[in-house]
Amino acid sequence: MTRPGTRTRWALRWVVGPALLALLAARLGQLGADGRRARLLRSLGVPAGLSAAEASALEVAPSRAAANAAWALGSPDAVKETSKWELDQLPSTEVGRRVQLLLRFGIVDTNPDGQAAIFGQVCAAAPTVCEHLKDAAERETRTRLVAPGNHLPLFFIAGHPHVPSL
Amino acid sequence: MVYGTAVGLGCLVGVLGVPPFRSSLPPSPSPARMALARARVGAVLRQPAVQAPPAAWAELQAEVAMVPQSWPPLVRNVFELVAATRGLTTGGRPDRSRAESLCHALRWSRCDRDALEQLRDRGRP
Image (cartoon, rainbow over all chains, first blue to last red; front, side, top):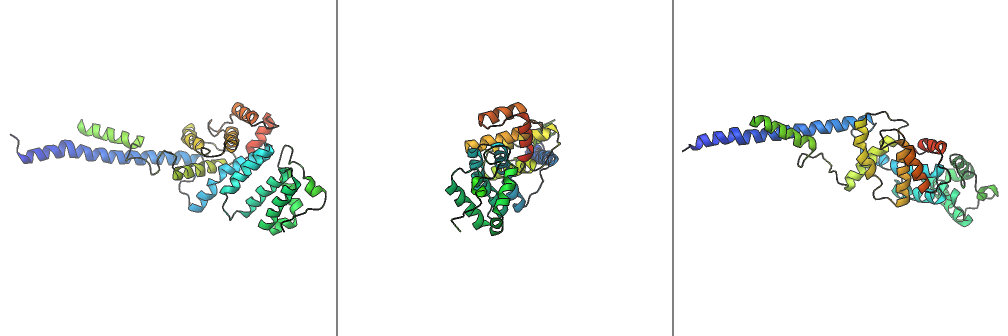
């Protein structure tokens, strides 16, 4: 019959010891895997630690990429839907981008009343842009590769930007 | 022998990320995980040209798939087109055939190689 002390020593040596060692090895393995993952992501240009503001700015980047791509080549529907999607996610502080998306939305809108309402929103969001609305719209049309929207809409060409909501 | 096996098993569990030795964020698409995926993919999209080893691209692949999961179909398709032109799931090399087929599926008026090359640059956020 084994004595209690011998049994304890046996358990410490063959059960508790290996279990603690396994736990330690698992933790080290996890840290190693996390470090490797972080190194790989850094090689892609992904920062290791992001502040809340940085993360928030980067989070919207994929939807911004979709909106920019749709603006470059997409149909008016694609421009409107991707712009609306980005607008829905955009922090209220990003007024410049909001204005840019609204301008694009207005440029591809075929309804003059709809255009006027959208450009009215631009004016409400950024009065300084509103003063040079035609120039701002023209800058946007230069970055679009397909029609409609790669030329100024009639709204501006007629020479009387009418903004009813002001 | 027992100690060696314990170390080996422990390392394996840790490297594979078996719970509770999983990284701080679960692989399932929880809101926090989705936000992190969007931020990481966004960081890559912002750069003009990314040179990275294949293992790094493989690490990003799951996140690229995760980003548009809850998006409207049209927006998702446009994002996938961007991902194809930027080569986000093909080791950084543009996947031209996929980009072309996605572009045609979107029924955009220009899906030629030159236009898709331009989209690669202009789509950068």
